[in-house]
Length: 152
Figure 1 (tube, rainbow, N blue to C red):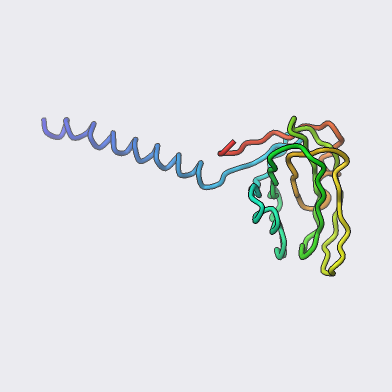
Figure 2: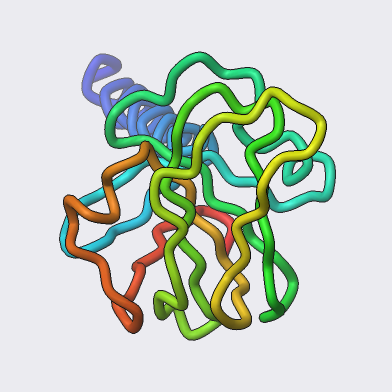
């Protein structure tokens, strides 16, 4: 009889462990976005320090991965590629999650005066992916991004 009573006790702790593991996995940064049905895992740049660093000093960006910059509101945005070593597509999205514009194939810049890549209108979200992805996906202004972010 003692063995019968112990089973639910251990089952409860096993279930609790599974639940805690699931929460930990969600908190571990499994953020991603969807564009035209394709998923991209993203690092989130939502503080001034993270936004200033962006993807600088990296030698590669894994396929299917990017960086999502999140700002407080819609505003004209402008990015540059200073100290960025990999070519990128820079996609600007409004607070309504609609594509405003794309700066395709923004080139690495290692000099003091780098070109800037402004948005064509106000944007709240900026997504950086490997160069060529915007064209590969066939993105056009008005296309929508779907956010799957743990903290939003």
